[in-house]
Every structure is written in C-alpha cells, then in structure tokens.
Length: 151
Image (cartoon, rainbow, N blue to C red; front, top):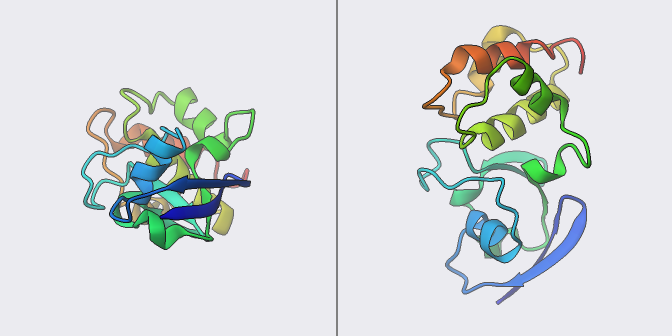
C-alpha cells in the first residue's frame, strides 16, 4: 500500500504492508532516525512527533492512518540550526545517552509553541509522558525552563 504524507514540510511517500507503525515508516522507509523506538507501547515518549498539529507517540499510529497528514519530527524542528530547546538541553547538561532526547525536544517545542510562559508545573505535566533513564529530570526541566519567556 502506497502512503503519501508531508514530513518536515516535504512531500514524501513509501510503500507499507499496512501493519507497520508510523515510527517504523519514518525510521526504515524515510531514514529519519531521530525518533526512537524504546517501549513501542506509547509509554516512554521517545518516538514523539507532531501529527497534524497534535503531539503523538508515533509507535501507536499506523503508517497507513497517517496518509495525507503532516508530520513534524525532531529533524524538522530547527532546520539547519539547532532548535532552541536542543540548545537549552545541551547548555544545561540535560543530554546523556540521547535516546529520550528527541521525544523531550519535540514535546517541549510543541509546549512552548502553544504556551509562551508555562509554569514549572505546566512543563512537568506536559512532559509527564516522556521517560529518561540517564540524566534525571532536573536538568531537563531546568533546560526547558531557561526558555520560558524567550519563546
């Protein structure tokens, strides 16, 4: 089955068996490997993308169901530059293994796009679906909090 969608502003298409997730299609067919597959159950957030304006776990979306949609991945956030969220996480030492980082970056960028001055509680609530096993959440939250008011 042929699927056409817009990924990071570019029209893309691929053939799928119909039983594959959007995450699988992004990584394997479109070679966009920023989104990670950790739990494959929508529990960790490492595969977060923006699908038609909504933050979703791409491991839970069937690729065929994304046909005709617009998808924004971590690769499309900053263009040729790092996105401000990526810069803030680097500057505050909130990146270790990097496995969870793309999901945190996409989720935080989406939050800051929608809410210019989220409170620390808003940030914690919005990122509650993302799990990190390396850095702990303090550095990640501090990194995102440095952007509050700048967005």
